[in-house]
Image (cartoon, rainbow, N blue to C red; front, side, top):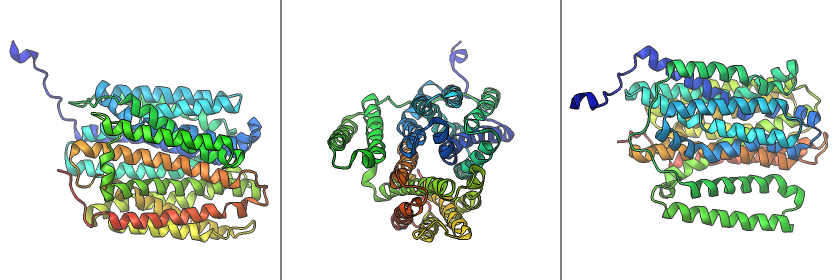
Length: 466
């Protein structure tokens, strides 16, 4: 009788089933990545449709990325506790319903609120899908190949968003970038129900609700100051009050995390220089990408009068560079460690930014396309070595948290990049956008140089976690 009460371990999945699980999870991850950037190319059309300016439009992008960034870690903890497939399916459902609300939004406020709910759903997809893949592939070699595919899909999704968005807007209008999610989510829900097995962590972490609330407040304050600062004045009473709140939230978050038994974010990891520089590097990569995408959108559509489709097509070199170099970067990390791909990422990103520091209304399109290609190559080379550097040398019990913090840093970088780029050109007329955007291209260059610092701090050879 005793033997009948013991739960038998789940049977290992067949090779075909394991790679099908990867395909389904990568498909869903592609949706999250595309939605991070697909809206960028449609911002001018959304502004005309809803009657709002650049500063309000920044919130359409950042409401999604800030919520996504702030909830990534807690969503992973919820999945470990209640079941990864269950949380994943819940995330798909929330994401799909919020996409429908975005498509039907009658005003900017409704659209921003729906984008925030989209971010909640997306936060249940990204870390949970990766945990499902890792759990389905116990063999380290096969798991490494799967993560390489994962990185390639992620890079492609971010870079392909503007092209996809431009094509949809040209054919069906800006609301189509949200309508398209409905059939994709429906297909994903069916595939997950049929293919993906349920799994949970043996010892799920406790939820750190005070830390979660403080992190969300902190991120919204950072982005809010960057977006609204140029409008209200950096030394205005409202700005000074925001600085005080920001300092208080930061101090409260640090105190709560240092005192918590199972904190949301292990701040002790930041005492390791490789980890700290990898987190800063991950943030820098996404600052550079999102600054480039938004400045490109506003420049071509406002200054040069191009259509959303033509604007989206100018990012094809970026998508090509990212898609080509992401798997190559994973191979280099496996063979030679993270330093070389990080050097390549920093060099190419900095070179892309330098190409456009003297951008003008009549700058040649070939030079702009070259800059996009260089930035895409840098983006493709960056993600795998940064993740490797963040988790290298850590035991599994801390490696998962380190990876989650790095993913959070990427989304924070995306939000900061959008807020910074929008702040630079907000209020500039069509003829002045090119000159106003030049500091943004210097920022892209600086982000590339920061990756060179991360390369110096990284380990010369890949280190396997014990």
